Length: 314
Image (tube, rainbow, N blue to C red; front, side):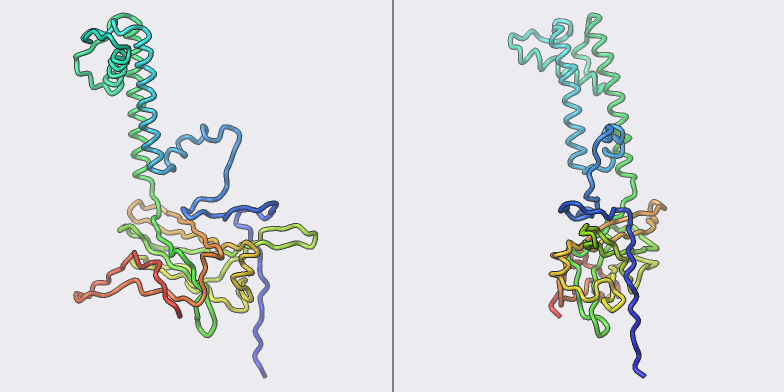
């Protein structure tokens, strides 16, 4: 009697990204792991100022610090300039307005940073009041900047490098979708768990287009140790939501492979997460990954992180 294969129906599971689809949208998960969702209204930026300053890029953060530093000193320097630099003792008389403004600005910088070289001193009630507020702004500003710097350095983040492409390669007399990742840091990650889903668009009987999410069963869903690279494999068989699909059909349905990696960071003793996704134009067929590690004469395993993206023709 011939053996029959039972086909299990696909089970839709919304991971929290919504199903209703009204217009064309970009990918759900950006390449940096952030979600392609913008929230507006209700003063979100100011209410979440700390989170925004902690999570923004280093380039934006340093740029913002520099802008605020000069802006505050320009403000206090301008106030002193309009009151009159004759209320600053120790300044040599100047005939140009630019030099007068620069003297007021430099005095504000010395007060703001509490450097106090002793060459310039305020005199008069109004200039002393401005210097008092300037010094207070400096104390609070440096305290906040120091706290934010510590928060950014101390926040645990997973620095995982994913292969640029996911591959569809021969696997156990069939095919499999696979991609791989490696830890770019020297810290220890343990107890890694992977969740992979297929998202694509489906047209409902009423003509409405909805996003549908189907979990992809993995050959190895979790690993206990992560000192090398990890190749995550989903076998494309009759039980797979990808069974019968080709890349052109995935492109037509705006499909996306959604990935969530969760692990324990031994350095911070905290759980960290990393997100990634692949669109159909980032999936290659009939390719296999090149080996990423070698063994030297001393028996050490050498992992070449730069080869995480390397693949070859089958």
